[in-house]
Amino acid sequence: MRHIKFFDTTLRDGEQAPGFSMKTEEKITLALQLERLGVDIIEAGFPATSPGDFEAVQRVADVITKSSVAGLCRANKNDIQTAWDALKCAKKPRIHIVIATSDIHLQYKLKKTREEALKMATDAVKFAAGLCEDIEFSAEDAIRSDPDYLCQMVESAIDMGASTVNIPDTVGYTVPDEFENLIKYIIKKTPNINKATISVHCHNDLGLAVANSLAAIRAGASQVECTVNGIGERAGNAALEEIVMMLNVRKDIFSDISCAINTKELYRTSRLLSGITGIECQPNKAVVGKNAFSHESGIHQDGVLKNPFTYEIMTPDSVGFPCSQLVLGKHSGRHAFNTRIKDLGHDLDGATLEELFKEFKELADKKKDIFDEDLDALVYGRTSNEKDTFRLDYVCFSSVYHHVPTATVVLPYIDGIKITDASTGDGPVDAVFKAIERISCVQSTLHSYRINSVTAGKDAQGEVVIVVEFNNSGKNIMARGFSTDVLVASAIAYIDALNRYMAKEKFKSEK
Ligand code: KIV
Ligand code: ZN
Image (cartoon, protein in one colour):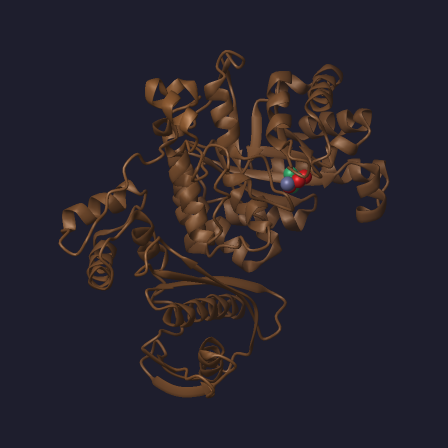
């Protein structure tokens, strides 16, 4: 059997996409779930890009014990040393070096000749190999590179110590036949290729990332780079769950392939990512979409009842799709609550569970039935953290037809000083944001505001998702708030965004 390694880059390429940025704690939670899922390598970030990325890579490297942890860097000593400083505490660290190899990137982006880039790459891999045993070399935009120059790069990188060579379709340009042929060509023309693992990294600009990755596996690639739910730059990366299930469902085609992924953790991992980022995947998303296993048409329903395999090529259970929607209510006890939270994939300590149980009881007083989505919202809505600068203590809105809306808020700073202020606004949401702005003295620009209903029903909780920029920093922050009162949810979301901004600023000033 040929073992295919799964290299997950949700925390690096995925997180790079607008709207998908994550807090360090969230990255750690996701990294632990990726390890539980069985990915071989977790790319935790790009340490030289920012102090926040450095810290996240270091903290992930610290907690992950079974998977390798990779950090991306460009082909220069500073990036490599920074990546190594963040990774060296990992049980299995991997330095991932990237340099472009296509003429268009060399000429316009790097402004280097092919010879100069080759020297940069070899120097970089040699330097990294002096620090770390596991080196991956990526030839960015490989698909649009001259194949012979690409082979020369790959051969030199392996000579200098790279144990994995990655062939990215950076711009999602290729088709399966062409990619399969390129991988075969590299295998044929690179004399030392058997000393390294061939990896592929496909983007989805034309919707072929998964198909291209599978073609590369057929051609001899033994590592695929992918992301949960296919998130990533532009149209995203190859979706991990789709590659995994293709290998599983079509064992007749991929009969010689094995991998370490526990497919029963796929749905949970997908939900965790959506929960953290607030971005749901589309209902018809392959493998993990809400509708992936629901049969609407009468003919299909009839067939499935007679034999599920008439319309189901894989079982919901095989990807961990929940079969039952257990409903909790105000009479449910701790045991049922804790069990359901665990079944939903949340790994929480006793104190947090206790705190959430109290919140669950309060929620159950306001709404009759508590669904899985409500429980997820309780977990993801946990914004209070001892490091937060602000907490919402009190909020009051006044909105009367033909009168100016107002909001009053009380925000205690964490050190205990309570500050009250009020503001008018175009509407009650605008008024509460302005009141918080007055207290915090942090100016904001709201880029987007969305309300979703967490479940069906008139008594459903509202989820408010906002994207806001503070102090014209150029950095958009996404945050969420949950409550049965959407105005309160708006205030909670704004304070969460503000705390995320304050944490970043504090981190920068401490560095
Ligand atoms: O798309 C790409 O080429 C990348 C590299 C860093 C592997 O993300
Ligand atoms: Zn990429």
